[in-house]
Image (cartoon, rainbow, N blue to C red; front, side):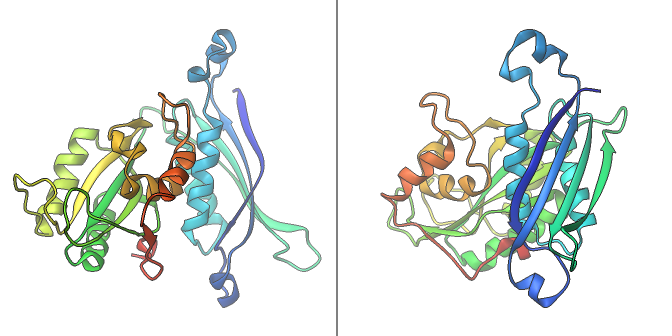
Length: 280
């Protein structure tokens, strides 16, 4: 089978079991081989027919920086699952190493191979915005706990505090969660997000700027941007850019990382340092 590879991707993240390993990030070296038929791309010379190794690399970085796994075995398995959710990827070989982890050895690690199960539908990936300005600390934590019960949460951005849009209401706390799910877009919204909002006391009124206990919206579903506010609003752009700085805005040709930097210079948004939703 054809192979697309990412060689020597060096990421810093938490991995290991000792107190020192849990308290500071260390180098993690990752090599990925993606198996899939690339003959169509070879004939068309079109980027949309290729396995998107750039997206795979960015998602790998975002995951490793936040996962804080105890073992390289678990981290390699997680990354293999994420790769197999990508379009066109039928199998993957992943090597995860901890350089300098053992005295006198250059590195230690594991290498695994996994393949997409025959006849099984590929899982969807989505980016979900979370926002609250009524008891935001409690409601963001509770929303994340409920979300984890219903979908696979891969990683969560930092929590950002931003001004309320369209009103003089209390400042919001916002974050973006990257999830995987077997549900389609409509079912995800109707069977997961709306019930969580209702459980946490969200009341919808004619005033779309009214304070709320929790607001959950799908920003991106299977690489399709559903909310164009992502390119304009600080409460969407800043947290999402931590997870997917490579997302391209078609009209301008700029990526979300660049756009977020521009938005940040005109925003009063600040990171909430003592609230980590990855730990929920």
